[in-house]
Length: 352
Image (cartoon, rainbow, N blue to C red; front, side):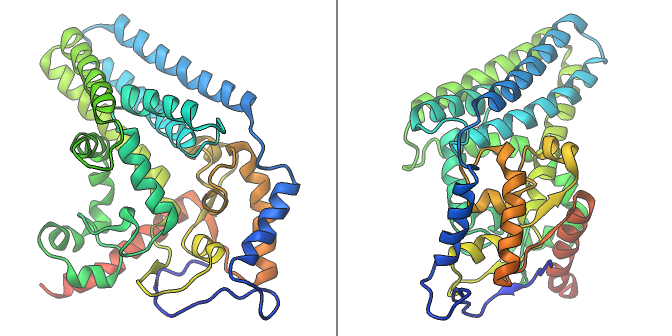
């Protein structure tokens, strides 16, 4: 059941028996998952999937070259937005070592896909995403719910100033329009992060980012007139941002927030703050397996094709423990997220 409230009370792990160690519930689930063989690598799956994305990218580039200076290029821009979204999902799986077990090939693939092909820093995103996985929906520790522009709890709304306070009043209505800027926002923050002490390879990452945008803008303004090039960028980047937001927003937005001092064991911290999205093969392909968000958070390195089987095991196990396990349809997930955003923005609207 969805619960868009803030978890504030201490909630220690409660095993099926009194006195069980904290974390033992997850250990039992992990044993069942491992016994089912759901953590083994799936090289054939990723070869086919990444090969299909590479072919789609090559096809988009070829269509761009053939069409030349034409308004038909806006259709190519829309198609490439989907391809870029799939590249983002590929970078995500590489970062979690779902594809390769070893660090070096995972990083090499991530740098190629994220920096060179997408124009997004692999190192910056890895740092940010790792902190999200460690503390999902934590008001102080999850960078994905920091009140940079939007507010995710009434406490954040009460403390909001400046732009978050202004946008927060109508953030539910503004959410999808703001997503059109998400692709550019990722690139901006990637360049900004190059100066961060946490960046391990700033020269390499910066060089790949520059190479991406030299190729990207160079091709656009060489082949297209300035007006068509700008229109291409608007359509491509806008739809790319909406795609990414439509994949990542349903996973946690509108699920319980966690305040500092709340005590939850690993299994409950991941399950209670995550939402699964039903929808069959189309949703699986559209979201790249992230519709199984609960299982992904419990087993981040689990290959995508194993998540559906892991979902059945995990849901049944949560039922045994009496742990709420929430999943819904794609459209319903967005309604829940937008309803939550409107609810937490009420104090800002009332303050006018």
